[in-house]
Image (cartoon, rainbow over all chains, first blue to last red; front, side, top):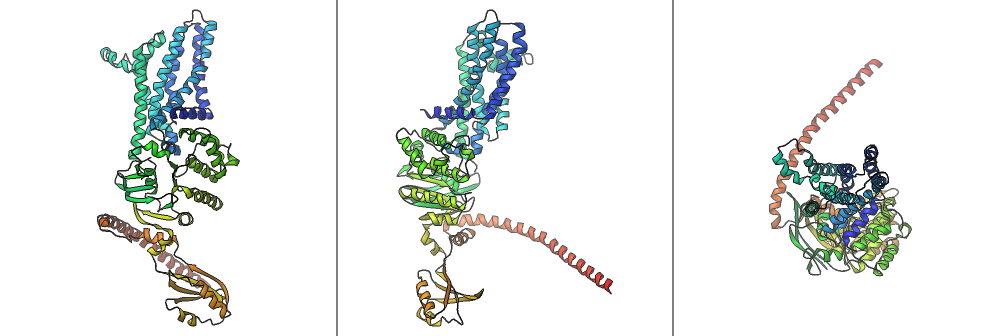
Length: 240
Length: 367
């Protein structure tokens, strides 16, 4: 098995043994569920765009909570040193951890299929295509969030700090799409491109645009590489 | 065979390791000894490729470790300082995880798992979570992890720290067995450990090697004589006839101990006259209570070597100058301490006068 998959497997199975993981899952699903119960069912709309928007917004808290420990915790307990000295590349470690969290995200997204079930039962004219692309969009956006969180986690051995840094970076990318009325329209047209919303929009409409896929993939790869460089740099300049 | 040449590494202004060179052969257990902060861990981390050296090379059988780090680390087993482990995993899961990352395949994997389970004594805790293990078992798990792939070079950073005496003996026994067909390098700040385990010792201090020699030769760095202490019960014992036979020997001290006497003889380090001495004692009909040879313990040697700077080379003169500056600072801090100490003396004298005054007043009252 590829070392990255071995690490991903370990990350995922260890996460599943931790109570904190279930608390994070629980809070996220509960928040989404409450919104869904209060809004979607009342209107009786067969539309998932609202709940997707909320799920995306809650990523801001949910994903940094999943990623904050991924590297920071291993560094503070010293196990990072252990696996760094095995005959595997640092890239394997970082990508393996990324995949581990991505599996967790998929797990949680599977639970939200309940919403799809409810809509298909009570709604009229359900657009399954848009739901599928919506999930795909959330997965891609989630991957970008995870990469940012991993990078934040690689910067420090303090998990709380890692959470805050991840929240700040992904928050900045998130908020860009929602400040349209605060800045000149021309400027907004340019910077809007860097916001998550802009790229998620077409997914939610049921359209898969390769430019959006590339944008999310690029953010993911850039931040994972940054995390990897950070680990490499640490081997060069470690203060201990 | 491990060859380390001119290895140096600094962290900012701190020179953690300066120009270290040594070699270690197969079947050799080399003790890396030094006070905390001497640069042991830094050196070991460079050997396993976790830390890049500023300069110098580390070669394993002639191949530079940093040329092909993955191939090199496949041949190295490493037990990091403080033995980090995944507490949520069971021992078996953990070892399988490490083995998987080392790309070990069946049937070799099962064979090695069985080997470490038996040899590291992990049978009882095989399915237990690492977080629930005692420190001794944790350490064994760490060792098992380091040897699972049967490495040629085993690097152990403080392998017995924090263990109780029985556990220390067990781990030492294990390391000794492992050392028979591997190169083992272990760091320690405990003398007995190195004395008990290692065939060779490298003493490192302030990032430099100050001694690299076999354990036996170590004492020769300090003293040419050793002492035999003889405790016996006798009336007016006289050693003069015996001493005349051995002119190199001196009777340096006689002191009473409980109801008997302790005699101290100073003899050259290469002589061992205990047999002759005990024969003489029994000839005289004295009761021998105990006799032992006081060799300079590694502790003393270590202390002497690291607390002063016994070996000066020309290269070190520059460093010496730097140190003088530091010493100057220390002196000034001492002065501060002294000035702080003075008022204390005053307070004591004040107390004394107070006490005297009280005494006087009490005597007056009695009158």
